[in-house]
Image (cartoon, rainbow, N blue to C red; front, side, top):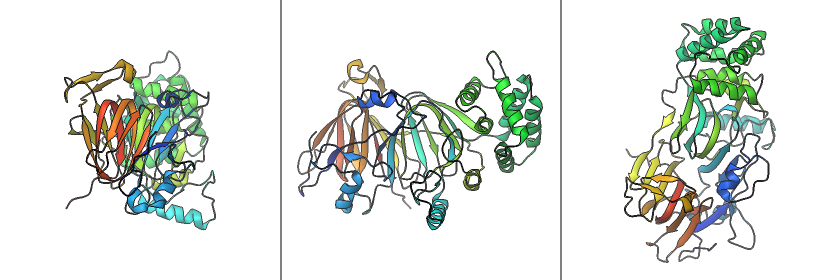
Length: 440
């Protein structure tokens, strides 16, 4: 790997790397396959690419003494940071081999207050019972690399009632508990009804256990309750991975989303969600604040989670990207912390902006629709880039000194602010940067 320096002697195209985080819900082979590593046999869940202190990326082979992006930015915050400080975003690759916890993230005011309160109470930052590890909010955007399934935001309460009744009708035992909770929701205010349902589901009442057993009976092998097949598959997976967990009941409040590769979901602060399976790129505000409600062995704080939740309906969990240029798709949720680009490039000039590029040798059989022979991306602020397919040449021909880096699948690059970067070659990269400036 080669250093690339500007006229002041500072590195401007920097290879970065990190060790995947090993969580129980991770996949044993997806991240090793992308990174070109041998599987360890343990689940590898998340690859963090940023300067968050929870797992900062390292500068790869650039100096004899290993150092992280935190140290790089602190050496020259004006050149390497954002507004003289750390990166406001964090790019991740997720490899979801089992359902993640039901969770929500605080908004800015909640995060600041919660962080200050836990500091005042003397809760160590690394304590497993800590809710707020930083004072930041955590909106997040996920783009599927494989098929991804997720529970994402509250759906209409009428749909929950309908599924509760369908499960009750199919349950040979204990159906009365499901009928009862469905009847209590009929005619309820949407937001109040969801809050009442959640408080009941996490109450440890005898009826909750009865309802869970009725759901298991209703979805048993050979049973065909009158619910959507995706919902049935979800309930069976949750019951298998987390038997007896009320999260299976809570899932009935949420949209079930099945994303094809290239499709995305956006979750603002205070939205209840859980990712269920698949491989994805995720970008978020640089925070590790998570309020968990179930489907996990980690710390759960139901009162705090209920306090931060937005009980309103999320009318559309999916977020649709826009074509920013030939070969370039942009997802911009309108937050200052981040936006995400996907660039697809090809050697084949006949593919054109609307064509399909397929190169089994470099992409493992992947097809990249809409690839262009060259994609140009502005770099007014730092970028973090990961190649997810093929091999892409990143260059800055407009810089005073020519710079370039050849990035293969699984490799990552930090790009300092400056002249636009040009992408050529045959492959796909995702690039995270700050949100677009707000215009009056």
